[in-house]
Image 1: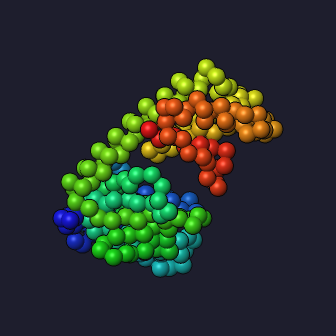
Image 2: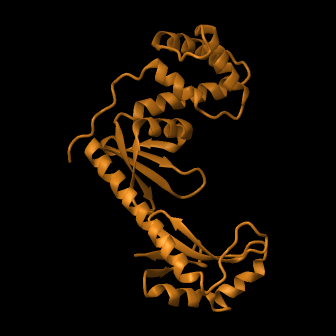
Image 3: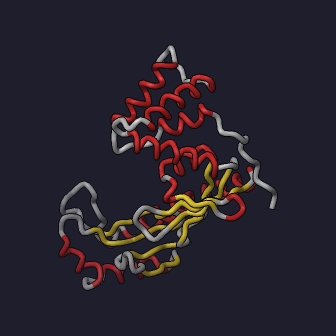
Length: 255
């Protein structure tokens, strides 16, 4: 496999500041603290700080984070999170793989991954072998592995994802066409709009019952025979699999 091109060594102060300004803060006034530091250095509010100006802003924010003022601890953590992201994301393109596996892999550019890693923070982002990164989900027992790839590999992944999306849209249209004449379809705009819902899920399509504000309508899906009817209507045209433990009321379709 060809080596993925690396991002230029030595992250710029301007990039560091840009990532910090895009961070979310629980202490919302820190956004104003950062903006004030920028305005003290940059003459026009419409101009982005250049490298020298960004360095001066960084010095001001470092002093703020070190002096115990309101929000200083959170700002210090955010600055360390940004540094951590810049230390880890060293390539132009990455392949994103969900663990456990869910759907096709996708491609992520360095600037997107930098923002994601900076936002996730040091506690949820781990360095892995070969320049890869592992980003842990906040509450689920899941993660995403980002592996560096070449520009050609990234292009191929994007083409695969585009083809899968187009196929899923066609699959959705075909499923709706097969079901609509025979079953009640969900109407999301109504409280009593319960019925069969067809949704695109990554590279596949899910068919499930949506109870709306009428939870007792779930009985129609299994006990009322609508699930079996949907299976019969769809099996001739699609590969149909039953739902999983997370959603036993769904079925998945693939061409």
